[in-house]
Length: 313
Image (cartoon, rainbow, N blue to C red):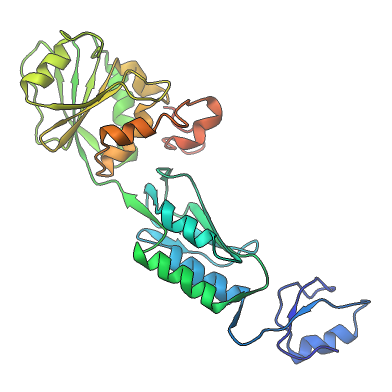
């Protein structure tokens, strides 16, 4: 018969694999039907998977991420607030190169809500070497965790629209902004006066046509001294979006307000901007890989309405 402290590597009746056997459970084994036992002996420097996994999960969880109780053989990492998931991809890859340790996450830049599982940490065998766990902890410490949830911090948004833009599109925009805790502080219609920004932290221009250099919205932006970062983004639908910066205020342009009622590139850029990110031309160019936003990619959009299709209003 086995001795206390050995790890059971197979299910035997009610005794589950991974269990560190106690004397009581060894006595229980005497009453069960089995022909052979698979056991693992903990050697000096070994950690049981539960201890090692909890340490790996704790090290992986950065700002805005918490560790939930062990479930389905792994440690869930859950968002502690609504925000944008940010992953230290290089460090994550280094950790996943270490024997017996695995950390998986949702995609980079995913919009998540409070208590949503955004990743999992797992030990592959029943026992891991402590030196491997320490290596993973050291790597994760370099970036204060492998993943974090960046909160949405911009709340004041101004809209600049063409005169023929209807209120339905603005209503959809308002509902989307509310999901992030933001709201419209002003709406200016081109041709009715100068832009009113009212201290806005983000400007959204609707009805502009980036192909036309004489477009009133583009001209108004130029007169205000904005720097255009990128005309057109490599995301479909929504290629005709553009991004500029007016001093430190980001300005995102869309061809019409109709774009606000359906999921498009706008719904991938808006969360980044409201989380305080300032995408560069190079970062926008990288979005082309995976930028074909088919129906199967709906999981990438914000869940504006609970239980509804992500990205839709």
